[in-house]
Image 1 (tube, rainbow, N blue to C red):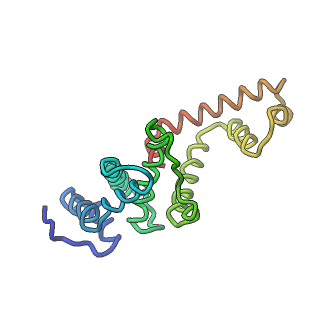
Image 2: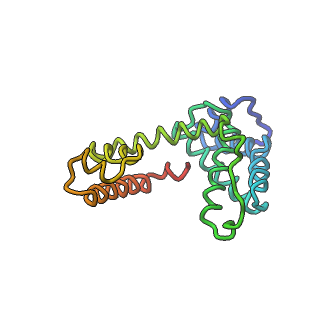
Image 3: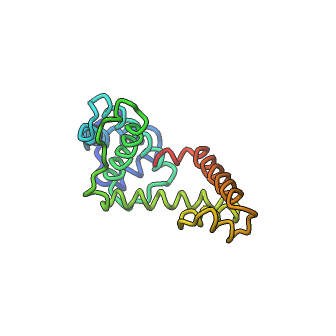
Length: 194
């Protein structure tokens, strides 16, 4: 691998990542080490209570996700590659701290000041778009039931709207629809990138 190659723009990096394996590896190496993506992710994880080992793992996982998303045309260039990479790293770290008991006492918050940042907007749009596609796979009846629950309808109100015999039947129908949605999400690896 020629480590002296440089990439001046995100477009050049994207083109190389989509290219042959040698170019792809050079582009990923360049971004990860020369552009400092790895160090940025390690610093991000450290900011939220992780150590260098955690940061290194998260930085690797984020690089794999970025690589996969670029090659699968899921990166729509609404932000810079670095912003996209860090947003993925932040999401991976956030999920890990939620699952790992050693972080239960950690006051982990995503930056409140960045909640309206470009990276969050981008991820919210991506996540919403993905969810809409998955929800479209549900039956019309399930989509309506989930819409009612999202709008705050009670089981009694859903019973009236959907003409169920009683509120308990409405509750069971909503539960089954949620389980179908959950199953669809779990069967799609893209969901885990969010």
